[in-house]
Length: 299
Image (cartoon, rainbow, N blue to C red; front, top):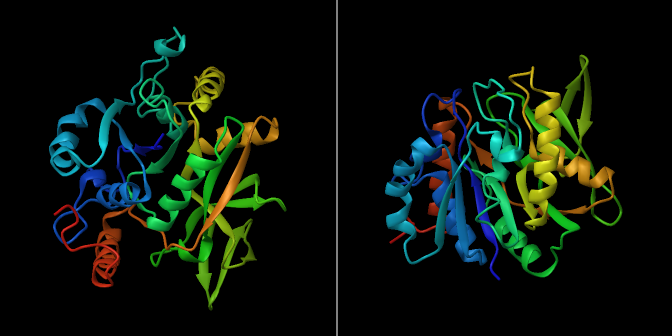
């Protein structure tokens, strides 16, 4: 059974100023999602599921269906504010959805095979998709999941400090904890993070999470249970978000599942602000020039 790619694309993109999920970055207007799906197809994935806002669906279909028809199965699911589907009758006011782990639940009725979750606006590289596809087809079980670990030195921004989820790994290569470092930056050829005004060094190869997770459908039931608890506990906190690392933390600390940290040497890049666009365009241009991708991706 080929694994499924679940793409988180329902974000508001408020800092970017427009729908960066479908903005063009490649030489023929390709989105970052195009490159992720292209790599996923080459790696052996059999289906892609877009998690989007319902009002985006026609835009997404118009952009992706002509390219993907005959290449990979597609489906579209919607992240929304309806809590009654989870047995929550109380109305809870929100300006934005509940976060990435809540988004995963949108796919629970259409994803029946091992799957991975990625961000729509991040470039991950073929090596990551290949390693994840291999894991999902040969190693994944309902108690053995995975996360792709990027070398922190290959995820930094030229435009200032970034936040990164630093992975702590045991001797077996399994995740023990993700520690969020909110101010990570290069300085004098080294990498540091700042905490309480103090600088601390990090090795270039320190593994970090860039939100590339591998699961089986068994995670949906657990996630739904955790979400109901989270929504109840945070009903008076309209900005509280239910993130995927909260699932990982719960499963690891309860000894319910392990997460293999699968290393990749790929360089990651992503887009948060409009100012990031020229850098992302140049990075993709270089990948085309060195032969990683054809100039016309879907020709």
